[in-house]
Length: 130
Image (cartoon, rainbow, N blue to C red; front, side, top):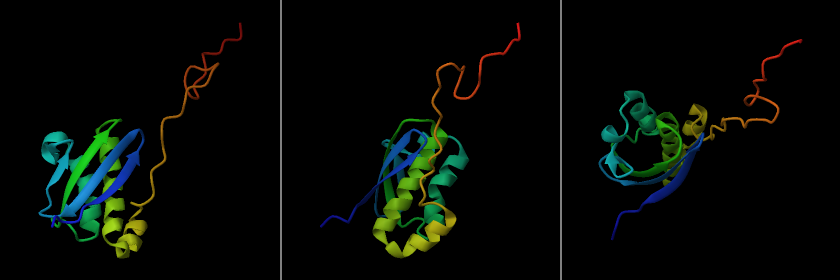
């Protein structure tokens, strides 16, 4: 019988990450590539591993991720959110620890839309008295 897989969706800005985790050796695969190939910056990799480090599960789960939209930083945040939600599927006892760290809450900050009569979301056209 195959090992149990747990699924969750994580979001950040315009990025959406579909995350599957299963008991394993700690291998993280993002869009069919190893995490080291997909993310160049070490901070992005660190962000993704934070939920595992906080719950002492580093190296205990294999992770498969499909992520789209946004940039590398937003995608890393979406993956972190997805991994956190998947860990809660595995063990609900982890909730207080993850909640205290602020990992469960979805970061809802997104780009504000441009308004009519303005140059941007809040920026107005240059004012001239004459």
